[in-house]
Figure 1: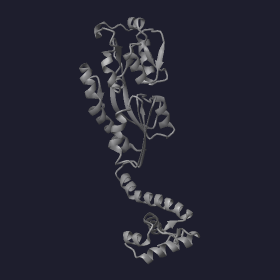
Figure 2: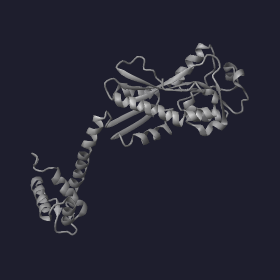
Figure 3: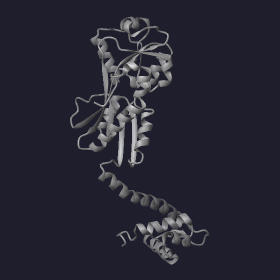
Figure 4: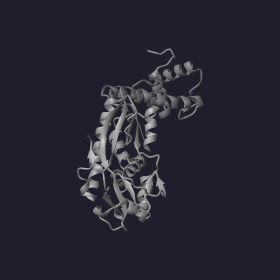
Length: 321
């Protein structure tokens, strides 16, 4: 049955196959048609379009300029058509056709590559971006992101669903040159000895740390601040100062572990929580699935490395609720 356009998908398939093989006999054989039927289909398509699509005076057969453009358009249309049943099966199973995920930047490598590997066969289009908590928050608000995993609790936002992914304590990170044990760390004295390499005040981690220092009435002169865990950890490893960091940000850069010391935060313990958020009524099944996948990646790829380097973290790093 022909559409109101005067041609159908079968005509486009015939034309695309002729353009690919540059031979009507070979195209007919692939398509299970006769050569005259292929030739007739191409002629009808030319009549509908009002232009010649194939230069029949050249061997092998060659598309005209218009035919070359139509061949590209036909290939895309046929590809998109083939995706329709796949898309419908995905929807029927509660999976996403398009998924845009935002992650705080302490979840980058290898977290992103492992997630992509596990999702590539079940998602038609996948986009993963990383950034500061305030950036991924905005992405969820303006609908440019479907799901986010962040350490921002989003307490002021309604209409969202939450899935706890990880809870982890803040730790003190020291250069190897400082010979100290957890029992004799004094943050105020440490701050007089070496600069505190701070997180940028616009980052959620920076806000958490500054709030805790104020609670403890510890005032350390501000000298360096950055928004990159790589930069902060590299500076500590180089002996330029010390810092306060969550384990995930430390173990993302495990190649630097031999150049630093990690000790528990002295005084009242404080921690951060990574949570997956999605808009209520949108992709809730997918959100639950991604949250569990994220927990599994952390269990498999991160927590064992943390406990190997710092066994005393057992029970402090909690995956899930």
